[in-house]
Figure 1 (cartoon, rainbow, N blue to C red):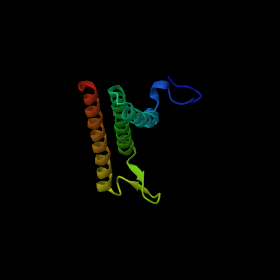
Figure 2: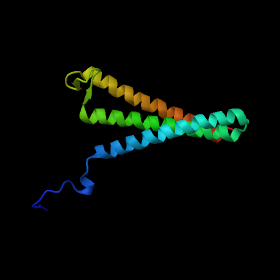
Figure 3: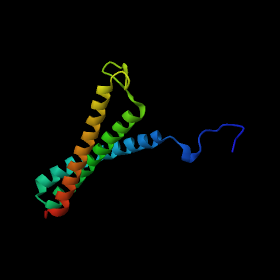
Figure 4: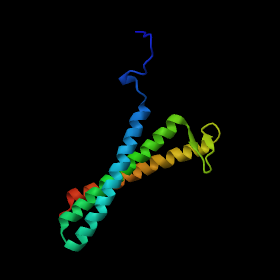
Length: 132
């Protein structure tokens, strides 16, 4: 169906980049809040000697590392989608100019995402299987 005036994309035609940016921002904020809560809970557990606070701190740390995994995967996705990034002094580098660097950066972000996901799962497994 053609329109006389183009008012932008339909709601389901939005580019997926906006969803990735929203996910990135939500994960960053949640990760920071969870890390602050984990620090406070670890201090509370150290001074009160109660296992409940230790479990809550490990859970907050697990959420924080899961958020870091999401951020790393979002960075890998945006690098793959655009194929360009900024260098050390702000120069624009592309996939065509430096293919080896591109795949090195891409694999680094994916490996970081996997490492953070495994760490988060390990922390969650510790919380759910250990008696505090």
